[in-house]
View (cartoon, rainbow, N blue to C red):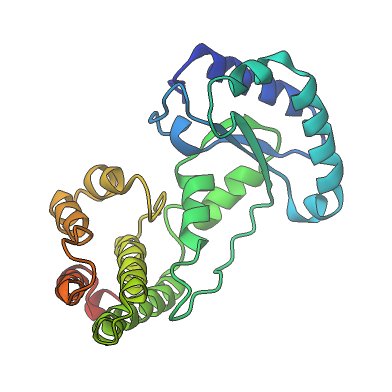
Length: 262
């Protein structure tokens, strides 16, 4: 799949990264991830790259791989040119082992990154280099979605945590703890997105950015985006307004993430 990079510098930098890792016996694949992989990047966007290394190898070779990459990155002029364009870093290389496990997710933690990792590294990435069958085996394991038993457990957990956060909004508002009430409303909104994607067996990109793209283009739910976006339009912060927002978010859960989908 050809990538429409936002600049020639992005394209040449990606080729330089692939050239560095090509022939590295410990590297299984090089993946273009992030906005560049989805054709959404701008000239100032970071070039996000994931380097896939089997877990037993990365456990012992990570330091050496990172050192060789940092030496190359420091010495290669094209990356210095890129740094002039990107405000927060240009060529970002991350080493991953392809082991995806549910993270900590309780009533106050907010969403974990389990589905996000699979989504960004496998479902929404573009392979730039494959030197073994490890990537294809991971895709067979995790795509198009993980198994129904795990999905049912995940959906039930995320839904319960989201509803618990909603339930706390009027409690904290009543105590005048408006920032905590907003935090609970915000986490419940992110957990709604997490549950929405799980219920539809689709991997997300993020819960705090690209929300319009995900709801409209990926899930085909433009009405949900409109409702969710308006939940964060608060006219008077120190008021009971957030209680009404929590009720509306509860309605979204009931319509789109009902127990019947668990």
